Image 1 (cartoon, one colour):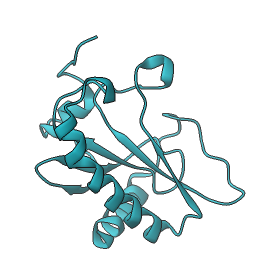
Image 2: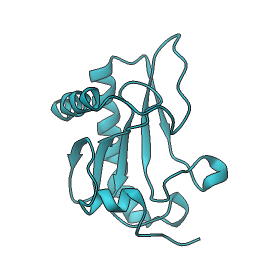
Image 3: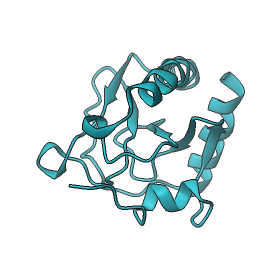
Length: 138
């Protein structure tokens, strides 16, 4: 399958749709997931157009992984999570719902089950505050 430039993340990257932005540079956009699996669920979206990990340019991956690590540290510091889950899905049978490469940083809290992927829209004011707090921790 090929990359579809009309996917929602491509539209967000082009500024056609809003998001709760945490950080942006030449390689990626970091934003809050509006359907979080837990409080603080953050997405790192490379700007290079690729459907998922399987067709991504290795140079783009090499550029974005240090940012994924940096964001994960900031998310953990802000949320005080007991652990973090890093997820990246490849194709619909694996759980991918937006067909633009992206990385999920999902805080995990002792004794609290993670929510289902892509369900339950979060409160925008809470997401805005989390975005601000995580950005400050970067």
